Length: 172
Image 1: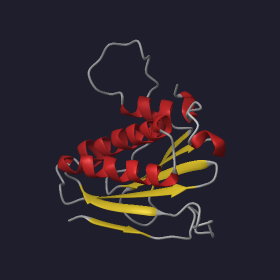
Image 2 (image 1 turned 90 degrees about the horizontal axis):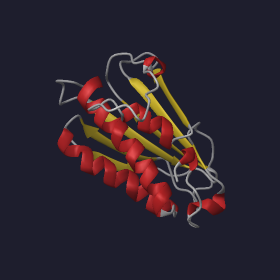
Image 3 (image 1 turned 135 degrees about the vertical axis):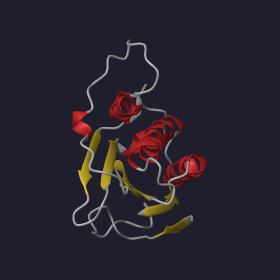
Image 4 (image 1 turned 180 degrees about the horizontal axis):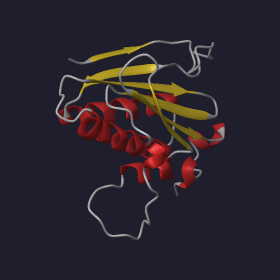
């Protein structure tokens, strides 16, 4: 089951947003199937392109979202292909915010240790990359229902979105 729609005029907190300049939230719901990773990537990339972000900023956001989506499908929804993943993107004048809402067991992202990037290992780099690529990374249990909300935010100066300036999160 795949459903996609766009709603305009609300920011991440439900307040009014300048929807003529920054539409959103943009939303996608997919089932927990690794074959849908490309769809999720394309969705996030499309939102970034619609917002006018440059290639570097777009790549950083898409990579962080891809890592998060992959982790949710493989770990939070392990063995439950019917579980849904809800992706919500919010474009603001000075930031981009993405919420990934899962149906998994409680997860405390703060318990994931910081990794030494020089350490040779297979796997286990998803949270490391998300932390490096985004300015904020939080994961909270959903109130009154199963699952978690992973919230990632990247900040930028409005003029940086299309000028080739360094992307947020220290991405060069």
